[in-house]
Length: 566
Image (cartoon, rainbow, N blue to C red; front, side, top):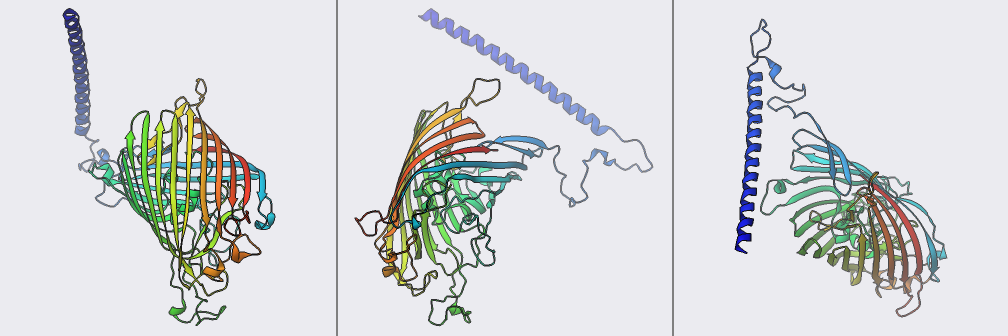
């Protein structure tokens, strides 16, 4: 045994000597090359131009200057470099020689096709109309992203798609078929999905507690599902429970200013959010025809007769932490909080509206909808959890929604102002989804505090045996928006239950939705994805508690998505 150990140590010593000798040779070679280059630089600097009448120092050794460059500033570094970077798909772009200034192209195309294989409406549901099958250009985004002076980042992305990510009626694309003038309505079409700048210098310079600041129009990464890029979603649409939560000031197309911080384990962010891009900022500053001093249809003559309400404002916060972060296993927990302290959904509409379609955007019909609730504010309290183990992934979120209402609103329907403090409405919702992947796994992304899509281990490429990765998924969603206070008897004549053409005073809310879904996703490579989903959705909305389904529906749908990103 001793002889064997001694021999092994001798072999190790010999190996170390050979490696050290090799390193020394490389260092000597590089040192010689550096000396050669330095000598060449000195020789070129000593060279003089051909003699001329003026023996002044030749400007030929100085880099060319632009006529527009202010005095005292150095010329830009050249030459430019071509970039190919990865961020949920490969981006093509350009950089200067230092890499501190970049311009990268960004694109996202998602084309959906689907149909409703089963549909059973309640007796008083939306005039018992059918649901339309078809094709939907869900997202068609093009833009530029990049870096300026290394510490500043920017993004400008325009969406030509025709359906919104948020449930808010004020979403930039909520009225895709509307031709309403922007001077008369707050639902004018605007496709600006991202237009923001970020200061990231505290990350770049290695501060102990790094922070970043964002300002502009952005996709607010509030809730775990929203922090997950739409490129990486497990299902074609986010859960209805999550979409309802974004009504309180989250989602994309959202104006916001924020501060956030993260490392490889924690993620923290706080946001002050405003209206969506395309909303009129004067939407709330209109004549209050609900006051005694003003006759409907006549102009306001004093400031006291104006509503004084500006655009919607909210405060959002999110925190998350990776309790376990290992190669084959992770465990994630987090919280979400929102305070909608200035609700506004349009002229004379100081209200909150909660609604969503049955987790598919092919047909615009929303069975889950509360109508416009006269409101003083609202809050959301949320919890998130996720875990991975090898090829298995699971994620879930729970939300508790609170709406502080205004009761006895003394106006006709459509003008939701005035009144007194009303009852507090409490709703609940959540989802749980899980998947098993073959040929790749999901990874934790610390910059967003969420997980990526499945990254193929062997992407499909000509001349290789790679075929990408498959993901088998399932999801359960439940959300209850029913309340005994959602009646005109409590909230006043201004409130009108949606989707009902008789018996509006006796309906009890927005409905309870329960959905069961399965899906299959194929990831050929990092820039493409194909999805196939099926869901069974039940929306129950009784005329009285414990009664039969009055204006809900049972819906079965199947749909597919083709996705290309760069």
